[in-house]
Image (cartoon, rainbow, N blue to C red):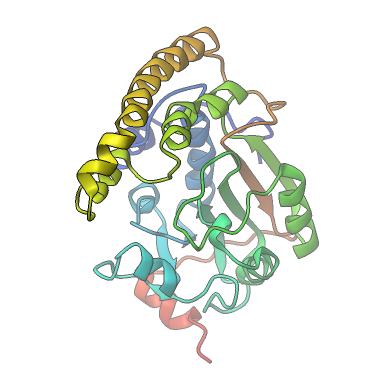
Length: 293
């Protein structure tokens, strides 16, 4: 597992990353770093079986077209994000049971999901159980980011917290890298933070405006709060220009020592000799390895 995770670009995967997955290509924001990270994951599991733990909108499925891609989502996430129209291979709570047999998966990816898992220690124990010896887990998790998917937003781990969880579960060869520069992280939410503080809300300003308008005596309330709306709008525009200037000055590649990133890119291995087993297709794999209570 590469310590720098940066290597040559697979043009086919790059095209998939940008065009199919609609991911960006900024260097300070870590989008390029994210590509290299998941490119390594795609190369390792090529021809094997990858579990997308917390698959959401199945955004990563096209990135793993040369592997057997297994999607897992939990019920609360499906209901919260109205994803009932998506067909997942496995539906279960990630920190209770991954419904697969021991040592059957080559790789697990977990993208922006760990913060929504109530008991991370239990998830890592399950991930370790279903991974083959020598198998890998690739995790991207936010660090400096606003609360989201409320009320199912439970933690923002430091790199040391991530290392402890993985080490306690039995993983080795742990690699943790910053997902953005410090400035990129701190400026990402500055414009909207000005708006939130001036309006004393976390709601979209337009939605807040319409909500107030529909209230009894809403017109009077809007007149009273109009100076705040005006200042919020002007502050937002000013801060966007300021942030753009600062980001232009500090447009550097993500570096390992960055300790205020938007998130972390984390990879680790299950100790042991890795032996890949081929399956004809996803249906055959699930038939042989699905865990039934």
